[in-house]
Amino acid sequence: MLARAYWTIAAGRGELRTEQLPAPGPGEAVIRTLRSGISRGTEGLVNKGAVPAEVADLMRAPFQEGDFPWPVKYGYLNVGVVEEGPEDWRGRRVFSLFPHQDRYVLPVDALTPVPDDVPDERAVLAGTVETAVNAVWEAAPCFGDRVAVVGMGMVGASVAALLSDFPLGRLQVVEVDPDRAALCEQLGLEWTSPDDALDDCDVVVHCSASEAGLATALRLAGDDAEVIEVSWFGSKPPQVPLGGEFHARRLQIRASQVGAVALVRRHRRTLADRLGHALEALRDPRFDALLGEGCDFDDLPVLMSRLADGEPVAGLCPVVRYP
Image (cartoon, rainbow, N blue to C red):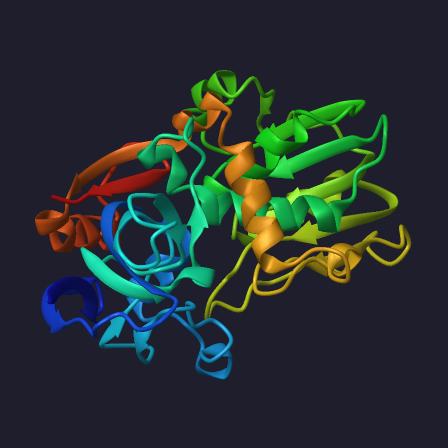
């Protein structure tokens, strides 16, 4: 059986390659892809060749082929249907952390069933919402807390959407792009510019992947408060404002990274549990607001080039449609 997959072959350039699929073994399934999603932040760094060599092994996607910078087959937001495999899996829609490929073979324990009431396109967000679940576990907000989420990209929007169900005293989404105000409204969130954001926060979650955003996050944090750093800067060494009031106000910056379950839940939750929570959260139709301009699979190299060149592409998560 033949399959086609997207490979990054140079900065901002990719191509579809044909490969031979292995026959499924015991406990394995053949999955036909229905939709895949593009994570603009991480895949953008991969497409630019901006993955630092010192963390290349840590930043590999679960089913990546090739090595950074290229050629590399990369991606992790895939929704498909099981065509062959164990009888109780056949015909089921599943989410997996597989790259952009029209058919593939995986062990069934690497598949997560998609709830019947979660559409294919919304389901591609499961990997992003899983990252957000981890960040919320790291942040551990308490009743009545004042919380800010800085940066309204895919992850920031997902974090804020999850937090909106908490009994917080205040939740603001801080974003420099005023066009994101409409997205906040769709999600039922309060948008504010950095200049107008309220400070003295108990928790700040930073998701903008910018130096200015991190400086804003530290400014909004109250004394002894914590900034949860979810952004990945790739090979860019950001300047962090650790002078001024940083020490006097005893602020903290703590990383959140999806490769491991947040420490506060690591002994009681598995990676599969966390992904299951994300798919359950996606029953909420508000998340459709995150979906953006997509393309047919055949046109994926063109769309990836447009993203790499900084051309405007509507929406946060472009969705790839498969025949």
